[in-house]
Image (tube, rainbow, N blue to C red; front, side, top):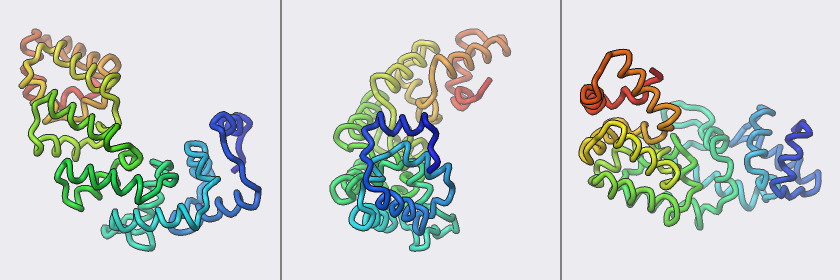
Length: 253
């Protein structure tokens, strides 16, 4: 991997289990071969640094079955090419979320995906598209992470299941956010800053769910202030503009 001293130290601080050199060489060879074909040394290094436990696994008994199951779940062909011609789909998933290789498909990945699909009433194709867009969701716990976030959003914004489904399909990364430190403060700040009613906040989020992934202090508030100053808007005019055009909150204004 040609690790720098700093990178080697990072592995050590993560309680990296170091098997024998032959095992490491074999595992790296597997990762560089189909179906993953991670040939870039920089990408491979990044993957191992993010999830060092991968090196200690048995490829044949652990990683290979997981990859095969994911391939079927997400409708990826055996050569790693998707129906639309996209190449190296499995590789993209693993690079985005290497921890999925450390999880058991039957005990972890499948129950999470099945529960998420049932909760949001997703079609198989919608589930596939969502997980390919944000594979990190597969590594989250449904009862401890996904379900509480879904319930919070639905109750806080008084959403129907259809509206919740639409929001998550457009911005699945919302489910990776913490309620107490991310979602709740952002919703409260937006509502307070613009003096929105509960229904207006609901409308803004439904039409532009990406705002929940932004920092209020670093992104949303400066945009609002710049927008108001540039257009010489009163507070009421700014509020009406944002409610009518919520996409403005995502601009780097």
